[in-house]
Length: 85
Image (cartoon, rainbow, N blue to C red):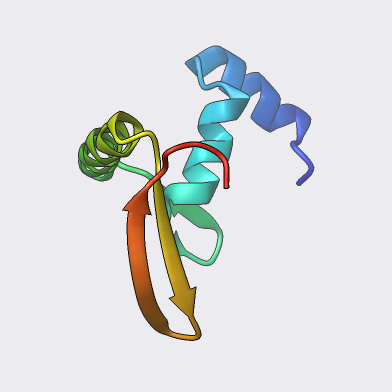
């Protein structure tokens, strides 16, 4: 997406980084057809979700990884990773 000169100037003045803009575009909600918003409340909810995801990933890491075997839409079995197979 093209960033206008005006937008770059305002970003600089307001301390808004390009990565912040990208994040809002990815995770924000469209309040109108041309406006994407990620408010404080939504950011806090996203932080809680990421903390929960981090805890889950730490548990998976502690197990050395997890393997899930599926066939079609059926889950057949699951086990802890114990090396390369």
